[in-house]
Length: 205
Image (cartoon, rainbow, N blue to C red):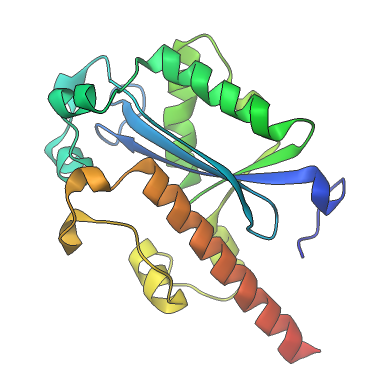
């Protein structure tokens, strides 16, 4: 159980979010997909959202990003990628259908990275991404608070014994590594951390 600043547990939802991009610089590089897993505070999945996004400046893509997510204009066209402004509208519609009157926590692995890219995406569409969430949290902070100081994601996956997402470095096709696979991994890590927290509470009681 989490201690909440206001409201009861049923008043909250967590949006586990991950994005894939054409590089590391928000405002210059762009998002090429976004995955969102909406869950309750105990990690029970409610619904998912995934959309590939066609960047307006694909020529800016870095080689490192392409190796990670497999973006290409041709492949994204075949995958029904949508323009950035359309993606914003679809994200907002997803929240409106799921959230109702709930308070929303954005949860990501590197939350400053994901939030910065989503902020640029929404601003370019004259929308405010910050209006969708009450708070933004990251998994490494949660991990640190539980006494696990191996903050690199791969080390956390190994330590917690959770299933990793597809990665080109492990033989997967780069385009199989998406925002949705990342968001689902974040949820698995979150659930494992809740279990570790409960084990700690049980030992202390």
